[in-house]
Image (tube, rainbow, N blue to C red; front, side, top):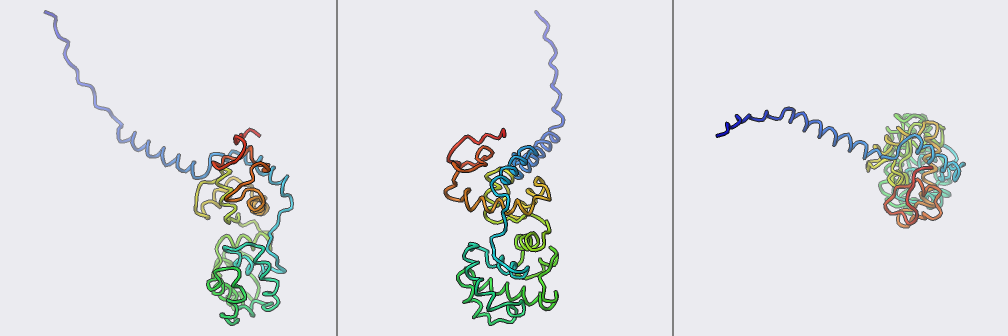
Length: 257
């Protein structure tokens, strides 16, 4: 009769807790990468910037203005409104209200009707009058020229402040994130965040600072002319080969350029 080999108990697996922790860390890391966008290699970003430079070398802010204060008011009015409509309204608006003081102490009901075509006119009236009053009382009647000061004004967030600083003062304080920039950042795989502040941070990490102002205008122009929300004109897009968008209408989205 053969002797049976003594059974040996398998050692308990060690490091299970550590493995789970590492796994969770990996998920968090992957989520971070996914949120930022996988297509943010320096080579690919340079290719995108070059294509934008080729198409829109002289892209500028479309809001018509004569001074920083007017640009501030126009940017507030542009929320949920096209720049074209804002420009139509401000042609007469800035004649009727030529200074911050005129806006600060305007008849609110009358101002509401003056800006009604831009939408959300009651909230915009409060923001415009509040910002104008603060400018008159605390900034000597001149639009502030720093991010910190602009953010102190009622109705002004980073998007508006970036528009004013970049366009009126030539200060690259950040990247303007409007609806077009949000959409294109997703389609170009530069950011998969949905919060404008986080999108801006993602873009600021991969776009050279000396390109921030022009890049903002270029994406906005491209979003209006080509990469539209519902029917993107992919056939005529010079970024098509660099695009990862799921709703592309042509091409395969090659990224080797």
